[in-house]
Image (cartoon, rainbow, N blue to C red; front, side):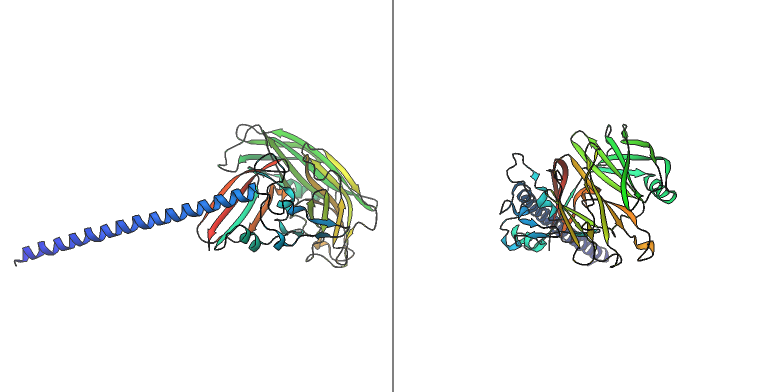
Length: 403
Protein backbone atom coordinates (compact mmCIF):
# COMPACT_ATOMS: atom_id res chain seq x y z
CA UNK A 1 0.00 0.00 0.00
CA UNK A 2 1.45 3.35 -0.99
CA UNK A 3 2.60 5.51 1.87
CA UNK A 4 0.03 8.15 1.04
CA UNK A 5 -2.81 5.62 1.02
CA UNK A 6 -1.59 4.11 4.32
CA UNK A 7 -1.56 7.57 5.91
CA UNK A 8 -5.08 8.23 4.65
CA UNK A 9 -6.23 4.86 6.02
CA UNK A 10 -4.67 5.45 9.47
CA UNK A 11 -6.08 8.98 9.55
CA UNK A 12 -9.53 7.60 8.74
CA UNK A 13 -9.24 5.04 11.58
CA UNK A 14 -8.11 7.76 14.01
CA UNK A 15 -10.90 10.10 12.94
CA UNK A 16 -13.46 7.28 13.21
CA UNK A 17 -12.05 6.38 16.64
CA UNK A 18 -12.29 9.98 17.76
CA UNK A 19 -15.88 10.16 16.57
CA UNK A 20 -16.76 6.91 18.39
CA UNK A 21 -14.96 7.94 21.60
CA UNK A 22 -16.50 11.40 21.44
CA UNK A 23 -19.90 9.80 21.01
CA UNK A 24 -19.35 7.54 24.01
CA UNK A 25 -18.18 10.53 26.07
CA UNK A 26 -21.20 12.57 25.05
CA UNK A 27 -23.58 9.73 25.95
CA UNK A 28 -21.74 9.15 29.24
CA UNK A 29 -21.89 12.83 30.15
CA UNK A 30 -25.55 12.99 29.20
CA UNK A 31 -26.40 9.93 31.32
CA UNK A 32 -24.29 11.16 34.24
CA UNK A 33 -25.88 14.62 34.19
CA UNK A 34 -29.32 13.04 33.93
CA UNK A 35 -28.50 10.80 36.89
CA UNK A 36 -27.34 13.80 38.95
CA UNK A 37 -30.48 15.71 38.00
CA UNK A 38 -32.73 12.80 38.97
CA UNK A 39 -30.89 12.35 42.26
CA UNK A 40 -31.19 16.06 43.04
CA UNK A 41 -34.91 16.02 42.21
CA UNK A 42 -35.43 13.00 44.44
CA UNK A 43 -33.58 14.70 47.30
CA UNK A 44 -35.61 17.87 46.73
CA UNK A 45 -38.84 15.86 46.98
CA UNK A 46 -37.67 14.28 50.24
CA UNK A 47 -36.77 17.69 51.68
CA UNK A 48 -40.11 19.22 50.61
CA UNK A 49 -42.10 16.38 52.17
CA UNK A 50 -40.15 16.62 55.43
CA UNK A 51 -40.53 20.41 55.50
CA UNK A 52 -44.31 20.16 55.22
CA UNK A 53 -44.44 17.45 57.88
CA UNK A 54 -42.49 19.60 60.36
CA UNK A 55 -44.46 22.77 59.67
CA UNK A 56 -48.00 21.37 59.37
CA UNK A 57 -47.99 18.57 61.96
CA UNK A 58 -48.15 19.42 65.69
CA UNK A 59 -46.60 16.05 66.45
CA UNK A 60 -47.72 13.32 68.83
CA UNK A 61 -48.47 14.10 71.57
CA UNK A 62 -49.82 17.35 70.14
CA UNK A 63 -48.57 19.32 73.17
CA UNK A 64 -45.16 17.66 73.48
CA UNK A 65 -43.51 21.06 74.00
CA UNK A 66 -45.56 21.70 77.16
CA UNK A 67 -45.00 18.52 79.17
CA UNK A 68 -43.07 19.98 82.12
CA UNK A 69 -43.47 21.46 85.61
CA UNK A 70 -41.45 24.10 87.46
CA UNK A 71 -40.17 24.87 90.89
CA UNK A 72 -38.07 27.91 91.82
CA UNK A 73 -34.84 26.26 90.66
CA UNK A 74 -35.52 23.78 87.87
CA UNK A 75 -37.59 22.70 84.90
CA UNK A 76 -38.80 19.13 85.36
CA UNK A 77 -39.60 17.52 82.00
CA UNK A 78 -42.42 14.98 82.20
CA UNK A 79 -41.88 13.51 78.75
CA UNK A 80 -39.02 11.34 77.49
CA UNK A 81 -37.92 11.64 73.90
CA UNK A 82 -38.93 8.05 73.14
CA UNK A 83 -42.48 8.97 74.20
CA UNK A 84 -42.68 11.44 71.30
CA UNK A 85 -44.27 9.42 68.48
CA UNK A 86 -44.31 12.07 65.74
CA UNK A 87 -42.19 15.19 65.35
CA UNK A 88 -43.86 18.41 64.29
CA UNK A 89 -43.67 22.07 65.29
CA UNK A 90 -47.14 23.29 64.28
CA UNK A 91 -49.20 25.13 66.88
CA UNK A 92 -52.02 22.79 67.84
CA UNK A 93 -55.47 24.32 67.38
CA UNK A 94 -54.29 27.18 65.17
CA UNK A 95 -56.59 28.05 62.27
CA UNK A 96 -53.63 29.28 60.20
CA UNK A 97 -51.21 27.07 58.32
CA UNK A 98 -47.47 27.40 58.99
CA UNK A 99 -47.97 28.81 62.49
CA UNK A 100 -45.42 27.23 64.83
CA UNK A 101 -45.57 26.63 68.57
CA UNK A 102 -42.92 28.85 70.23
CA UNK A 103 -42.57 26.36 73.10
CA UNK A 104 -41.73 23.50 70.72
CA UNK A 105 -39.27 25.70 68.85
CA UNK A 106 -37.61 26.70 72.15
CA UNK A 107 -36.67 23.06 72.80
CA UNK A 108 -34.49 23.06 69.66
CA UNK A 109 -32.20 25.91 70.78
CA UNK A 110 -29.89 23.73 72.89
CA UNK A 111 -26.98 25.13 74.88
CA UNK A 112 -26.18 28.77 74.20
CA UNK A 113 -23.06 30.95 74.57
CA UNK A 114 -24.67 32.32 77.76
CA UNK A 115 -25.58 29.15 79.64
CA UNK A 116 -27.53 25.95 79.38
CA UNK A 117 -30.31 25.97 76.83
CA UNK A 118 -33.37 23.80 76.32
CA UNK A 119 -33.27 20.53 74.43
CA UNK A 120 -35.91 17.86 74.87
CA UNK A 121 -35.45 15.70 71.79
CA UNK A 122 -32.18 14.67 70.16
CA UNK A 123 -31.19 15.02 66.53
CA UNK A 124 -31.03 11.23 66.12
CA UNK A 125 -34.55 10.78 67.50
CA UNK A 126 -35.96 13.49 65.23
CA UNK A 127 -34.23 11.93 62.22
CA UNK A 128 -35.79 8.57 63.11
CA UNK A 129 -39.29 10.05 63.51
CA UNK A 130 -39.00 11.87 60.16
CA UNK A 131 -37.89 8.70 58.36
CA UNK A 132 -34.55 10.23 57.39
CA UNK A 133 -32.31 7.22 58.01
CA UNK A 134 -29.46 7.54 55.52
CA UNK A 135 -29.95 11.29 55.34
CA UNK A 136 -28.72 14.23 57.37
CA UNK A 137 -30.61 17.45 58.00
CA UNK A 138 -30.22 20.89 59.54
CA UNK A 139 -32.86 23.41 60.64
CA UNK A 140 -32.41 27.18 60.80
CA UNK A 141 -35.07 29.77 61.70
CA UNK A 142 -34.16 33.40 61.06
CA UNK A 143 -35.59 36.82 60.21
CA UNK A 144 -36.46 37.78 56.62
CA UNK A 145 -34.86 41.17 57.31
CA UNK A 146 -31.11 41.76 57.31
CA UNK A 147 -29.95 44.59 59.58
CA UNK A 148 -26.49 46.16 59.41
CA UNK A 149 -25.18 49.15 61.34
CA UNK A 150 -22.17 51.42 61.02
CA UNK A 151 -20.65 53.35 63.91
CA UNK A 152 -22.77 51.98 66.77
CA UNK A 153 -20.20 49.64 68.29
CA UNK A 154 -17.61 52.40 68.52
CA UNK A 155 -20.10 54.73 70.22
CA UNK A 156 -21.06 52.10 72.78
CA UNK A 157 -17.41 51.37 73.58
CA UNK A 158 -16.67 55.08 73.88
CA UNK A 159 -19.66 55.64 76.16
CA UNK A 160 -18.65 52.80 78.48
CA UNK A 161 -15.04 53.98 78.60
CA UNK A 162 -15.77 57.65 79.36
CA UNK A 163 -18.95 57.10 81.40
CA UNK A 164 -21.22 59.36 79.34
CA UNK A 165 -21.71 60.79 75.87
CA UNK A 166 -23.83 63.61 74.45
CA UNK A 167 -24.70 62.20 71.04
CA UNK A 168 -24.79 58.55 70.04
CA UNK A 169 -25.32 58.56 66.27
CA UNK A 170 -24.91 55.81 63.67
CA UNK A 171 -26.33 54.58 60.36
CA UNK A 172 -28.64 51.61 59.76
CA UNK A 173 -29.25 49.58 56.60
CA UNK A 174 -32.26 47.26 56.14
CA UNK A 175 -32.40 44.64 53.35
CA UNK A 176 -34.37 41.59 52.21
CA UNK A 177 -32.61 38.34 53.17
CA UNK A 178 -33.30 36.69 49.78
CA UNK A 179 -31.69 39.14 47.36
CA UNK A 180 -30.30 41.83 49.71
CA UNK A 181 -32.49 44.45 48.03
CA UNK A 182 -33.07 47.61 50.10
CA UNK A 183 -36.26 48.03 52.14
CA UNK A 184 -37.60 51.61 52.19
CA UNK A 185 -39.93 53.09 54.82
CA UNK A 186 -38.91 50.66 57.56
CA UNK A 187 -39.26 52.11 61.05
CA UNK A 188 -36.07 51.69 63.07
CA UNK A 189 -36.45 52.21 66.83
CA UNK A 190 -33.25 52.24 68.87
CA UNK A 191 -33.36 51.68 72.62
CA UNK A 192 -30.17 52.35 74.57
CA UNK A 193 -30.24 50.68 77.99
CA UNK A 194 -27.62 51.40 80.62
CA UNK A 195 -27.17 50.55 84.28
CA UNK A 196 -26.02 52.79 87.09
CA UNK A 197 -25.22 51.93 90.69
CA UNK A 198 -27.53 53.56 93.23
CA UNK A 199 -26.51 52.64 96.78
CA UNK A 200 -26.10 48.86 96.90
CA UNK A 201 -28.11 48.05 93.80
CA UNK A 202 -28.00 48.64 90.04
CA UNK A 203 -30.87 50.46 88.33
CA UNK A 204 -31.70 50.41 84.61
CA UNK A 205 -32.25 53.52 82.46
CA UNK A 206 -33.09 54.03 78.80
CA UNK A 207 -33.05 56.55 75.96
CA UNK A 208 -34.77 56.05 72.60
CA UNK A 209 -34.80 57.43 69.08
CA UNK A 210 -36.57 56.41 65.84
CA UNK A 211 -36.26 57.05 62.12
CA UNK A 212 -37.46 55.63 58.77
CA UNK A 213 -35.31 54.16 56.01
CA UNK A 214 -35.09 55.96 52.65
CA UNK A 215 -35.35 54.40 49.17
CA UNK A 216 -31.90 52.87 49.65
CA UNK A 217 -32.98 51.15 52.86
CA UNK A 218 -30.81 53.48 54.93
CA UNK A 219 -31.37 55.89 57.82
CA UNK A 220 -29.40 57.69 60.52
CA UNK A 221 -30.18 57.41 64.23
CA UNK A 222 -28.97 60.36 66.30
CA UNK A 223 -29.62 62.48 69.37
CA UNK A 224 -29.20 59.73 71.97
CA UNK A 225 -27.63 61.12 75.15
CA UNK A 226 -26.39 58.96 78.02
CA UNK A 227 -25.68 60.55 81.38
CA UNK A 228 -22.92 59.03 83.49
CA UNK A 229 -21.49 57.47 85.39
CA UNK A 230 -22.64 54.14 83.94
CA UNK A 231 -21.78 50.54 84.70
CA UNK A 232 -22.96 48.77 81.54
CA UNK A 233 -24.60 49.64 78.20
CA UNK A 234 -26.43 47.81 75.42
CA UNK A 235 -28.36 48.89 72.30
CA UNK A 236 -31.46 47.16 70.90
CA UNK A 237 -32.75 47.86 67.38
CA UNK A 238 -36.39 47.09 66.57
CA UNK A 239 -37.27 47.22 62.86
CA UNK A 240 -40.86 47.18 61.58
CA UNK A 241 -42.15 47.38 58.01
CA UNK A 242 -45.56 46.18 56.77
CA UNK A 243 -46.12 42.84 58.54
CA UNK A 244 -42.41 42.14 59.04
CA UNK A 245 -40.34 42.91 62.11
CA UNK A 246 -37.06 41.91 63.70
CA UNK A 247 -34.71 42.85 66.51
CA UNK A 248 -30.94 43.01 66.90
CA UNK A 249 -28.79 43.52 70.00
CA UNK A 250 -25.41 45.26 70.22
CA UNK A 251 -23.14 45.28 73.26
CA UNK A 252 -20.11 47.37 74.14
CA UNK A 253 -17.43 44.75 73.58
CA UNK A 254 -18.38 41.07 73.63
CA UNK A 255 -21.79 39.83 74.82
CA UNK A 256 -21.72 39.11 78.59
CA UNK A 257 -21.55 35.32 78.48
CA UNK A 258 -20.20 35.37 82.06
CA UNK A 259 -23.47 36.63 83.58
CA UNK A 260 -26.40 34.26 82.89
CA UNK A 261 -28.42 32.53 80.21
CA UNK A 262 -32.08 33.36 79.54
CA UNK A 263 -34.69 30.79 78.48
CA UNK A 264 -38.46 31.18 78.20
CA UNK A 265 -41.28 28.63 78.28
CA UNK A 266 -44.78 30.12 78.27
CA UNK A 267 -44.76 32.72 81.09
CA UNK A 268 -41.83 31.15 82.92
CA UNK A 269 -38.43 32.85 82.89
CA UNK A 270 -35.47 30.50 83.40
CA UNK A 271 -32.05 31.94 84.24
CA UNK A 272 -29.07 29.58 84.16
CA UNK A 273 -25.59 29.99 85.60
CA UNK A 274 -22.77 29.80 83.00
CA UNK A 275 -21.05 26.71 84.38
CA UNK A 276 -17.62 27.08 82.81
CA UNK A 277 -17.07 30.80 83.31
CA UNK A 278 -16.22 32.96 86.28
CA UNK A 279 -15.03 32.58 89.84
CA UNK A 280 -16.89 29.84 91.81
CA UNK A 281 -16.92 32.12 94.85
CA UNK A 282 -18.72 34.94 93.06
CA UNK A 283 -22.52 34.77 92.95
CA UNK A 284 -24.71 36.60 90.46
CA UNK A 285 -27.36 38.81 92.11
CA UNK A 286 -30.52 39.44 90.09
CA UNK A 287 -31.46 43.13 90.40
CA UNK A 288 -34.51 43.63 88.18
CA UNK A 289 -36.30 42.31 85.10
CA UNK A 290 -37.78 44.40 82.29
CA UNK A 291 -39.87 43.58 79.22
CA UNK A 292 -39.30 45.52 76.01
CA UNK A 293 -42.51 45.64 74.01
CA UNK A 294 -42.72 45.80 70.22
CA UNK A 295 -43.84 49.43 70.39
CA UNK A 296 -40.65 50.33 72.32
CA UNK A 297 -42.24 50.56 75.77
CA UNK A 298 -40.06 49.26 78.63
CA UNK A 299 -41.88 47.68 81.57
CA UNK A 300 -40.27 46.74 84.89
CA UNK A 301 -41.94 43.47 85.91
CA UNK A 302 -39.70 42.26 88.74
CA UNK A 303 -37.51 43.85 91.40
CA UNK A 304 -35.13 41.91 93.62
CA UNK A 305 -36.61 40.53 96.83
CA UNK A 306 -33.23 39.99 98.47
CA UNK A 307 -30.99 36.98 99.00
CA UNK A 308 -33.25 34.55 97.13
CA UNK A 309 -32.50 36.18 93.78
CA UNK A 310 -29.11 34.55 93.31
CA UNK A 311 -27.28 32.34 90.83
CA UNK A 312 -24.16 30.47 91.98
CA UNK A 313 -22.06 27.39 91.32
CA UNK A 314 -23.77 25.43 94.11
CA UNK A 315 -27.40 24.43 94.39
CA UNK A 316 -28.64 27.74 92.95
CA UNK A 317 -27.46 27.28 89.36
CA UNK A 318 -31.00 27.83 88.02
CA UNK A 319 -33.53 30.54 88.86
CA UNK A 320 -37.15 30.16 87.69
CA UNK A 321 -40.02 32.63 88.11
CA UNK A 322 -43.49 33.11 86.69
CA UNK A 323 -43.62 36.50 84.92
CA UNK A 324 -47.16 37.49 84.01
CA UNK A 325 -47.47 38.54 80.37
CA UNK A 326 -44.09 37.14 79.36
CA UNK A 327 -45.56 35.15 76.45
CA UNK A 328 -47.77 37.99 75.17
CA UNK A 329 -47.34 38.65 71.45
CA UNK A 330 -46.54 42.32 72.07
CA UNK A 331 -43.42 41.41 74.10
CA UNK A 332 -40.23 41.69 72.06
CA UNK A 333 -37.36 40.95 74.48
CA UNK A 334 -36.46 40.44 78.14
CA UNK A 335 -33.74 42.43 79.88
CA UNK A 336 -32.34 41.13 83.17
CA UNK A 337 -30.02 43.35 85.23
CA UNK A 338 -27.53 41.19 87.13
CA UNK A 339 -24.81 42.26 89.56
CA UNK A 340 -21.90 40.17 88.29
CA UNK A 341 -18.13 40.18 88.37
CA UNK A 342 -16.59 40.46 84.88
CA UNK A 343 -13.74 38.00 84.15
CA UNK A 344 -11.33 40.94 83.71
CA UNK A 345 -12.02 42.53 87.10
CA UNK A 346 -9.32 40.68 88.98
CA UNK A 347 -11.11 37.88 90.84
CA UNK A 348 -12.90 37.88 94.18
CA UNK A 349 -13.44 41.33 95.62
CA UNK A 350 -13.17 43.00 92.23
CA UNK A 351 -15.53 45.61 90.85
CA UNK A 352 -19.01 44.39 89.99
CA UNK A 353 -21.08 45.55 87.03
CA UNK A 354 -24.81 45.92 86.58
CA UNK A 355 -24.77 43.61 83.57
CA UNK A 356 -27.73 43.92 81.20
CA UNK A 357 -28.49 40.48 79.75
CA UNK A 358 -30.87 40.58 76.77
CA UNK A 359 -32.74 37.45 75.80
CA UNK A 360 -33.80 34.90 75.12
CA UNK A 361 -31.00 33.74 72.83
CA UNK A 362 -31.06 33.74 69.82
CA UNK A 363 -34.25 35.84 69.61
CA UNK A 364 -32.24 38.87 70.75
CA UNK A 365 -30.20 38.59 67.54
CA UNK A 366 -33.17 38.15 65.20
CA UNK A 367 -33.25 34.33 65.02
CA UNK A 368 -35.21 31.51 66.63
CA UNK A 369 -32.86 28.60 65.91
CA UNK A 370 -29.25 29.19 64.84
CA UNK A 371 -28.67 25.56 63.90
CA UNK A 372 -30.35 22.29 64.88
CA UNK A 373 -29.19 19.03 63.33
CA UNK A 374 -26.02 17.70 61.79
CA UNK A 375 -23.08 19.27 60.01
CA UNK A 376 -23.80 19.60 56.29
CA UNK A 377 -21.91 16.95 54.32
CA UNK A 378 -21.48 16.93 50.56
CA UNK A 379 -24.10 18.19 48.16
CA UNK A 380 -27.52 18.82 49.63
CA UNK A 381 -30.73 20.67 48.88
CA UNK A 382 -32.19 23.58 50.77
CA UNK A 383 -35.90 24.37 51.04
CA UNK A 384 -37.55 27.16 52.99
CA UNK A 385 -40.76 29.06 53.56
CA UNK A 386 -42.16 31.84 55.74
CA UNK A 387 -43.66 30.83 59.10
CA UNK A 388 -45.24 32.66 62.03
CA UNK A 389 -43.90 32.24 65.57
CA UNK A 390 -45.33 34.26 68.42
CA UNK A 391 -46.86 36.81 66.08
CA UNK A 392 -43.64 37.40 64.09
CA UNK A 393 -42.67 36.20 60.60
CA UNK A 394 -39.52 34.10 60.23
CA UNK A 395 -37.88 32.05 57.48
CA UNK A 396 -37.78 28.33 58.25
CA UNK A 397 -34.91 26.72 56.32
CA UNK A 398 -34.32 22.98 56.01
CA UNK A 399 -31.18 21.50 54.45
CA UNK A 400 -31.14 17.76 53.60
CA UNK A 401 -28.28 15.65 52.26
CA UNK A 402 -27.39 11.99 51.71
CA UNK A 403 -24.93 10.38 54.09
